[in-house]
Length: 173
Image (cartoon, rainbow, N blue to C red; front, side):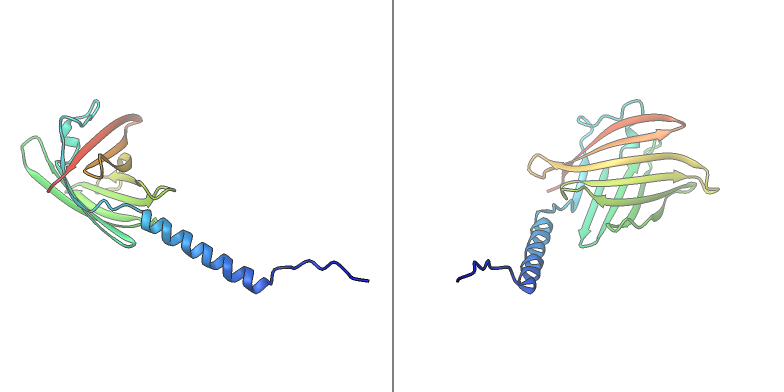
């Protein structure tokens, strides 16, 4: 009498195959991750500051994206046409980074990738030197127009009011 024997996968082979597939998936996901590196100039005609001054949108953003870190320098001009630049060094691990935007204005931010690794999500809070919260801002960074345009959709919250803004920047060549 013959017994029907069914083949069962060897547990070790299954574990190795699973590990290989996961590694390939993660490698593919990282390869699809886009880079925001470059110097970006504000396209004032396409920006929408809503009820806020256009000066609330930086005139230039320089981004250096390298592995687990992104360095963002923002240059703005105030009403007196003075230039103000501040730099953030943010890690994609969600660690909080503190910077001084200008005397009396401190910023704390985190940044992370969206689930599909096609956009960046930055959350920031601003406070004075005594720690009194002034505003919060949430930003969603995406590249459009064949990566020639950086678009940042943001919501700024000040005194219980929400101000949606669209920041548009063109890559410098």
